[in-house]
Image (cartoon, rainbow, N blue to C red):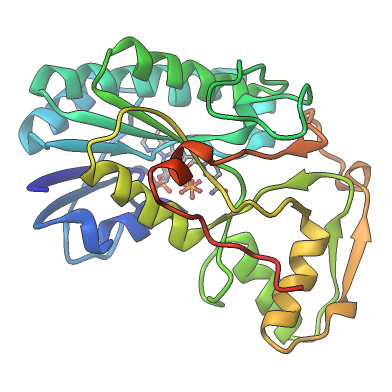
Length: 283
Ligand SMILES: NC(=O)c1ccc[n+]([C@@H]2O[C@H](COP(=O)([O-])OP(=O)(O)OC[C@H]3O[C@@H](n4cnc5c(N)ncnc54)[C@H](OP(=O)(O)O)[C@@H]3O)[C@@H](O)[C@H]2O)c1
């Protein structure tokens, strides 16, 4: 690849994409409120501002745009539907329009929240039916990517977690830090997820970008588990005490946004192409 633009490069995923092995010689990252220290060029961008998006994309003139910028808090999106719509739906339209104008491909990280509870596990071709505003706004974003025709790739993740790092802001890393400090962690045991292991999120995006794959792909571990089970697994992997992990029901989280009991994706299309997502269960 000769040129890559990563929006949301100050985020959990975007930061890792800037330094991914596959990202090539010329990588430019955008941030919104959190400037990034990086060996790459970075630029401030609000994706809600169509003209600014057009200006940045035109100047960078990338071959590929990984549009990772999003309003990602499920609760904040529920409380502020306008923010969700403007950032995740219209922001994506702005990126798609600008990328199309310079002939760049768009790769759009999306989410298992585009589905509801009609099936325990959703395949790539299942009909989305989100039950919260975050999911709806990301689905609207997907629609703009699809409307651009054959130039788009939608890559859905579930909960992105590190299994081997203690220095990242993601859920897996946080659980490990808590357990290492001897703290109890209370984790949900009545919602099943298929976590996306961080290395898979980065590597599978690279795999799909390099192969110029188009369409919808899921990238998740085949292991269905609750966050409680995942927390115990992380404890076992690092020789920490799994009994510090306590099971709680979702109701105790006090969440306002509705959430499905099953937030699970099947990654069959990726597997058919020879990419096997990481397994998490060791027992
Ligand atoms: N992490 C997960 O578990 C997960 C799961 C499924 C799907 N995804 C998808 O993966 C993508 C990346 O998620 P993430 O976890 O990296 O999210 P994140 O850590 O919350 O980062 C979000 C990024 O978007 C930027 N941003 C927010 N509002 C913006 C705006 N108006 N204009 C421009 N940039 C804006 C943020 O910039 P500042 O920080 O500089 O303000 C940040 O760089 C998202 O599309 C998300 O829907 C993530």
